[in-house]
Amino acid sequence: MRINDVTTEWCHGDIIEIVETAGANLDTIMLTKPYGAADVLFLDRMLNQLEKKLKLERKIGIEVLIEEVQALQNVEAIATCSERMECLVFGMGDYSGSQGIDIVNIGATADYPGDIFHFARFRITMAARAAKIDAVDGPFADFKDEAGYRQEARRARSLGMVGKWAIHPAQIAPALEIFSPTPDAVAKARNMAAAYREAEAKGLGAVQIDGVMIDVAVLRLVKNTSTKPTCTASEPPVLRHRCSTPLSPPQ
Image 1 (cartoon, rainbow, N blue to C red):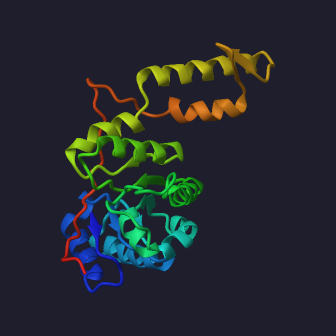
Image 2: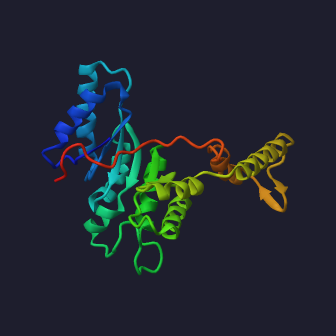
Image 3: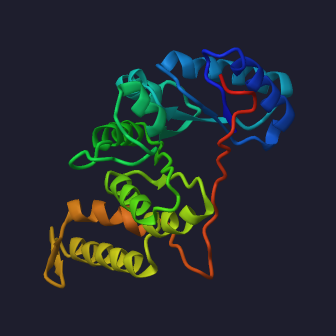
């Protein structure tokens, strides 16, 4: 559930109403527009109090939208400030406004020669990986532009992000396709890992498969594919719902 940011008069009430109403049914709360770790800790402390009051046995997780230039400057501290942290999401719409980036549609790169969001995505993903939490790319507003959505999703995936927001049903299929390895890709990765383990047992430091050298560094790369769930028509993946509407009126 997404709440208003801590600078508004609604944030405090949002947290109380959501937790007291949902109770043990609540998995995570998404905090919008934090500027630094202190904003996340405000939510963390309130959750501590409410969980004790309501005698909740399971801790409620926190997801954070990185939407301000100050948040990107402080992203490492934000990622590690609370044990509740589960995910950093790049909110490129508000971030563009914060930095003064000239774009027409949220998520698009306009006439910039390359990926205008590369640095922000890279830094958010690096902070998330170091903190052992997820990094997710934000929305792409023009839901009729599937090619544009796919391009931005591939850019996010290539940097290590684990998903991208889908704000319209038309974006779900390409998101699942891009962020879920095919069964063939998983099988290939597992075969490569098995071949290396077999070579390692023989005292060898590397092995080749189809002309490609496999060593311990490559093993680490293929593990990123071999451990991911696959996406098939007969076994669709389970999607974690993300509510995109704050409980109270926006500021």
